[in-house]
Image 1 (cartoon, rainbow, N blue to C red):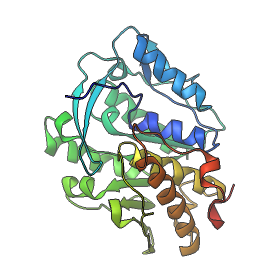
Image 2 (image 1 turned 120 degrees about the horizontal axis):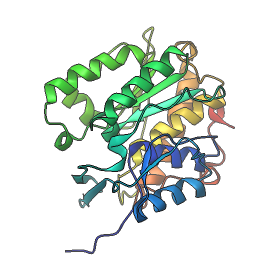
Image 3 (image 1 turned 90 degrees about the vertical axis):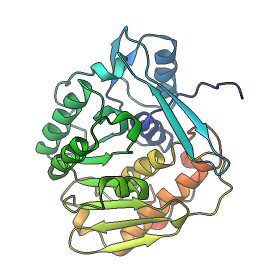
Image 4 (image 1 turned 180 degrees about the vertical axis):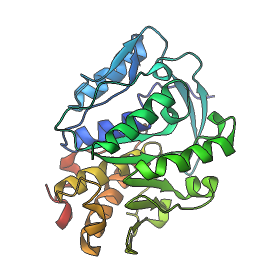
Length: 285
């Protein structure tokens, strides 16, 4: 058995780090342990230039996900999440006035009581007009009642501006839903597709790469989508339906390029802006 190598991660965490590396102004809002793993998580955020002023701290241990990576780079997971810090996240005060978007996903929307606090945050900030991105990044091993989770997921959609799903997520959830202003579906080596309200559908191919590790690729897509939309001054729920084919193609191309770089190296390591220079036309910053 190969030795276990600690890697800071988690869906929203990876998204925040990816945003920081791309040069975006980003903050991380969660509860982080005071243990050594928690200190490493904070250090990773700070190194990426991510604001940690919204981070809650606690004495509880850090959630651990043990990932096994297959020959094709795909990952399976085992979780150690009982009584961990992020499960005890509490609803924070309203986000700063300069906030334009907030992203949610993965275990944080499953593990109570924190899941309910994140749900309140989603609804509150959507009501304030922020763009809300949801990436369920479904981990079936963490979901004791799949039907209850699917019902809850459907209940979130009226407050979601941008939904990002993998093909696997869509199959597990019963299909690609309508409702959000735009839905982006990732197809692995098949590229990415967006379906926008009003009927526009745009696809781009994946960027060919030798896949080492797919962990964090979807989180990198989330960050690249937000970064690309910000470059178009389209980081609002009302702006998404008005984007044309060329604009979406540029945003998706940026996401495909960023995800390919993440897949080319181990350990959920999203790219820096310099690695993506020059950015595709509409997504240039």
